[in-house]
View 1: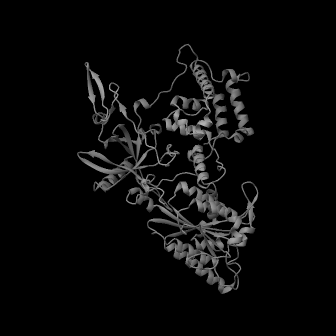
View 2: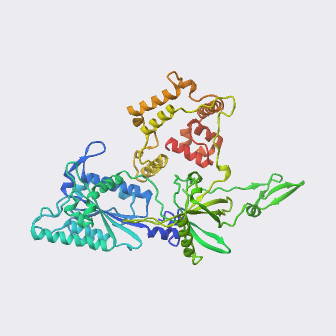
View 3: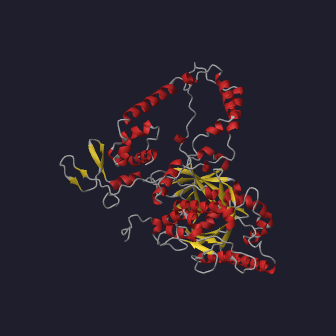
Length: 628
């Protein structure tokens, strides 16, 4: 039975004729996880996160399971296959020994990960020895070469799709740095040669082979024995390989649940330069906000989305109004009526183009002018032929003269000035790091630039000033708590992480929601270090003295104290009012939507949560806080 016959839940990206679908297909990734299942993978152990010994096989399986769970949210359209080699049983289309392709029913070998695949793979260690088994596939006196067979099977699985439109990878997990170490003489040379040739054939077809070595603290994986040749590692890079490979393995285990967005054209705009000369530009969003999404109410019987309809009734006659309503403005005792189209036209202050106004030195552009994430612009010859040539000439001149362009961004309802800053191309040994183009920075209005507020504006009040000792103690404190290489990208949104964890628990029918780490909470252990505590106490002693009463002077006096008292009183009043509601029962029965916005804000205020947004956003915030 078709689950969605009317394409109600169909996304634009699922339409094969849409631009989004074609761009998604061109950025699709095919991955084969190739896992060594030899007895050495089960007998070798190393300390895990909880200091308990874990086998290398368990580490490899855990990394793959976490990657599959993350991929459901990141890039659900990518396709994966899981292949074990050095196995007792065999299952593969080539019917070669020692290779077992793991899969579940109603799924191709190389396909999108499904909830059934993830659930079964989580329990694979319990039944692996019974159903699949482990054995050494490369033995002295035998012509069997399980590594060769595994690369052959993986290459065959990745025949799907073109290397021009898809990125194909083989991720190889093993703890055996010399797979042919037990073989001597001509047989070893022959097996090594044929295996390396098989790997080269795969690489010639656009398949990249990545090694994820599993070593022990007392025994390091020696990549130069064999695998350096297989993955094409130069002598100079071999020393740096192990640390980077170890970090890659840690990243796989600690992947964040987050959505990944491919590079997309947000919209096309026209840049008007001068005297009728114009070019076409594509704009790209560098940062996109990610939210759990709006609540969708479903019919309890049909499970179809509910649609909201609004009707207007005439206050005089009580009749249903079929024509769209009109607004009026009183002028000289007469009501001037405006239609919706007329109001829309009045509000439209621009045609939506980008008009070049002039150029300024880069020194005139300040950091605080950047109020929101910039937009990247790049030329397009699709509609206006010659746009790229003009853009390149403008781009090169701006870089040479250290200038940025000032332009009027003609948004239909929110026009503003923007700065176009040229970015030069950056290329490293690994390829292009930054593309050439321009960043469109949205400049602030005059009202957006706020002046420093003086709390001590009265002339008879002595304004406190920091002494040299205050500044020194503050600098010492900052040095103690300074975070090296800090970046806001290091911290995940805890609300989103919990939301995705709940989706995962529902999809996999897990009894408990996976734990999520809130990295935004204060580092109490770090703040309790002796050096930090000492620096804090010295700062407080320098500024306030040894007789300072924190309880009575923490806020200060005047307007700040009054505002604090009002906020505290409002929070206490909201907490008292909120206690009259059974919020858990309302949430479980779906009755939060029946409350007013003011009632919903009582819960949010009582729990010190933001109260901004529409009713659906408030309900979502309450449910997230309650863990529903």
